[in-house]
Amino acid sequence: MANPGGGTVCNGKLHNHKKQSNGLQSRNCTKNGIVKEAQQNGKTHFYDKLIVESFEEAPLHVMVFTYMGYGIGTLFGYLRDFLRNWGIEKCNAAVERKEQRDFVPLYQDFENFYTRNLYMRIRDNWNRPICSAPGPLFDVMERVSDDYNWTFRFTGRVIKDVINMGSYNFLGLAAKYDESMRTIKDVLEVYGTGVSSTRHEMGTLDKHKELEDLVAKFLNVEAAMVFGMGFATNSMNIPALVGKGCLILSDELNHTSLVLGARLSGATIRIFKHNNTQSLEKLLRDAVIYGQPRTRRAWKKILILVEGVYSMEGSIVHLPQIIALKKKYKAYLYMDEAHSIGAVGPTGRGVTEFFGLDPHEVDVLMGTFTKSFGAAGGYIAGRKDLVDYLRVHSHSAVYASSMSPPIAEQIIRSLKHLMGLDGTTQGLQRVRQLAKNTRYFRQRLQEMGFIIYGNENASVVPLLLYMPGKVAAFARHMLEKKIGVVVVGFPATPLAEARARFCVSAAHTREMLDTVLEALDEMGDLLQLKYSRHKKSARPELYDETSFELED
Image (cartoon, rainbow, N blue to C red; front, side):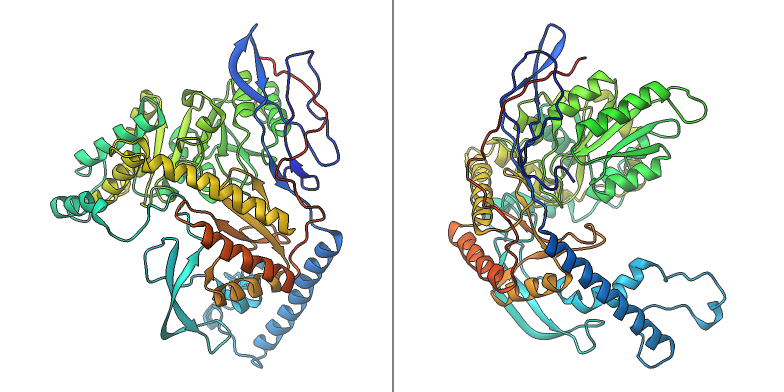
């Protein structure tokens, strides 16, 4: 965790003086240099763009009670497993057949123990069935359980107009049908629902080519390729780029799709601390100096894997610094913009635009259409030779079915909306409204005294709950107030860092946000969730300035 105990992470104004260490820290603030695109005298310099990221550490008593809660739950879990083994309590979990009793257990690991004894008791807070479009308001099908959440039955009642604070509908483009979606209906009538073939065979349509050209234009790169599934865009394309004899340097908080792709590649994987350029540089330096284990041969490739916005932390990658390092050590950079494309930057073009950098500085730009664009699938973009290579070697292109034509048209429609090619400025207005809503929501939560993680410009807002009992109580009480929230715990987060993850949308009105904030204020008092030891200011204090350079 980047600066877990310091409250706010920010960078002061940095000037081009003598080379100094960038490890200076004050009690609540760490200065991080941000790399300027301009080059002077062969050295990369820094500019004074302010980054504010909050990672406040919980009070000691909160962590003590959190671990005590898990400890007591574990003891009772073993007791209940004992009762199940002796037939005193009914076991509803998956078990081995009698014929397999002498086999190595298939299900008995800690994750299964955790699922059986803790997750099942609070499972009603996940997988809630929705029966409407995932707009700012949605409808939830009511369900109850008669066996402590092992099974559910529907009551036939629908909870209407629940405020949606969980969907990744950042720009509000996932909505009910209206006349602006007419082109999607027309495409459905002409092309049908699916392609039933891969891109290599009979599955490349003119709509796919139109979409790829538009994506490349939107990102200001040479070429792009689209895929039918966002998760597979990472997991199936990384193995096409690196393999045995290559080195992957991966952020410790990268998404599972990046982790899976790295593992499938067969490359050596090393992990650097989240958003920590010192940790990354040490790994890069060691990789260049020592090479591969045993043989000491140079690595064929070194690939750095990062995300634009981290979905569980709400933090933004320190891209300028990482670009400086990848240039210095001649590595490649792969950036996943699933949660940042469309939602970050003055016109929604992602983290490169946010920092004012040239997109060509990132070797592989990846993103998904499932969040901001209200659709499905993903893309890889960059140089034309990269994209042409993936068209031939990507497992997703060779084996996976092509993107559905109506989905492709929805993405085309969304991109034109963002780029103003539909003759309106509504797309730009959505991006600005999202930024406004995000800053308002984050600022109010900080003022209330909650511990929230991440960057002030990230629309993903994690609110720390910590204790497992409060996770369930929080989600249930919020639904009673007709507010739909997503709560997250182990194994998606560290064991003691359970949280609620809010996703702010441009479609949220100020009245909706105020309703949610009022309910959160009440829940914070009821469940004692206001753990922050100091209320944040709307304008973080800048500490002593420092300056440093990264040499090429």
